Amino acid sequence: MTGLPVSVPGVSVRVVMQTGCGPYAYIVADFEPPGADGESEFLHTVSDNRLPHEFLPAVWEGIQEGLNGVAAAVILTDGGFHEVDSRDFGYRLAGRYAGTAALAAAGLGEPPVDRGRQIRVDWPGRRRPHAGPVV
Image (cartoon, rainbow, N blue to C red; front, top):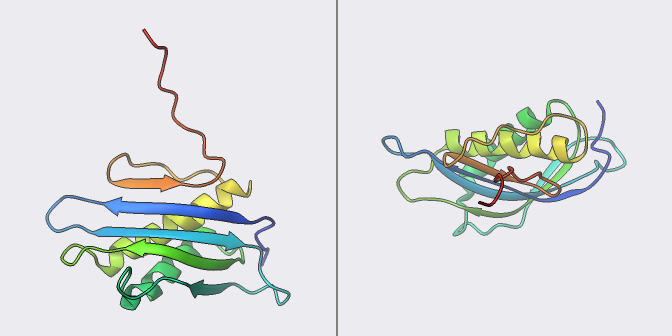
């Protein structure tokens, strides 16, 4: 297993699908190279009232999917939820996008496809869409 070569702080993902009842998810994570043992680890500093801890396993599963076998130390620094629309699926999806974005920021993969208003992803060094000429 290879490890993330550089730090990628402040990767944020917001999932807002307004078909029926969600899902809704919001996470912010810092990605670091793995520790001396080379294994991945997941920590969080988010209080239960910002992000109920029942969603943390789904976030971690999604991040591992997005990292695609690349080891990293991941610190979840912020999150948000909606009383009705938040569910595991949304947090797994947010985690997957965050892992993919961390790989792209580290030069190890392609950036995730931004799905407009449904899924918003931001990371350090992200290229902004070209707005076109000002007329």
